[in-house]
Image (cartoon, rainbow, N blue to C red; front, side, top):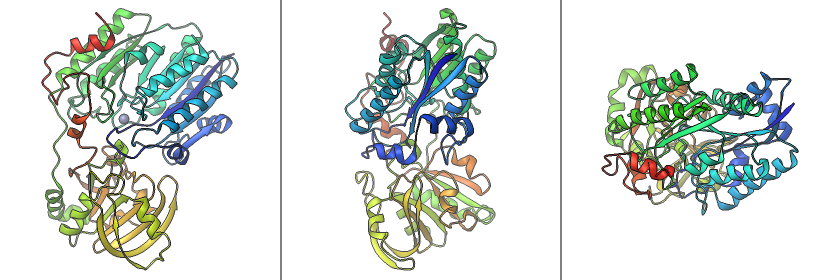
Length: 501
Ligand SMILES: [Zn+2]
């Protein structure tokens, strides 16, 4: 019986957010250890409120398929929503807990570690490589397989520290469990001596490209198809393309491709190179340009029939909480109040200070206060409003929540991250999207699936904030970066980043 440990420490960091991620953010979102983790990954839900099955359940499935051979050893699983960099204390506490659990786990033959790949921490460069090395310091040369979100960033140090690295092959992401199963098969196969993983990777000096970057749409569809093909034909155990989180502040940030083969270095290099060329060819297809708030509201107003049949969904693209923005922007909210008369609008803003003021008030009270613009005052100013308290709630993940009615707008004010991507964000507080003209979300992709029944028109709105694509251009890079700077050739930076002469 081989004993293989599994753990997760995952958060996607937006380096531009001034709101640090703390241990409370992990423990208030998803934190499990030992037997509770084993139960959650065996019976579900793995991440309450989000995933019945995710990567760790996938790993368990791979272990179950080898029932007599493998004993999965649960360590810990910590996940927090996208946000600012982890505080140093938070990172070091999670690292210490992981190491402590590994030490107490007894003899281990291998390990699967689920990381996001775009985590940042205050005062610590490349924190995820540090986690991988911390694991190494305990398990020594035992096989270690890591999985990442496809928005992760790869570094040579990370590649050096792992036996294999695998990533999602869907965007929007919907293959979490599949990736865990793949990582599980590789680590189990390696422990059993059946496979010998060999990694090749390529790094591109590029943070944006590939159009909408959706896996089933062009221009990226062909790249994803090539990855599937490589795995299907068994040239590769895993083929990945990392399209990076552009607001991550790793100096060597950039798209990368990474291929794991069974002891075939030449094939690994050939496929990684081919995928890199395919991505580079798509570099000029930039993400779409979004209209401003006034234009967006006018176009929602014009969509009369669609509003009657359902709602217009407006993504507050400059304040996307699921990409790490603080969620306290007032730009779109202000525009809806000033220019959206007659359009019943559901909106969201995170403001722990306003919650402090509002929580003691009774339902029905008329209140005057400022909301938003407190967590990231540099992006948007606080907004003065006068309205009625229509309900109060205590919610897992969102924390204390107060709903205000201000003229034609309903404002859901949350103490915790205003991660608005599912209709339940509104229905749980008594706001039915069938009765709205406009529903605000703070998300780039998954809301398109979740809002399908209600949504008749989608508008991404650009105001000003930490998830504007060009906001990433102010981060420090190790050289010219596409599309901010002209870059003719990717190979010299690739070689430098990989330490190849
Ligand atoms: Zn992602």
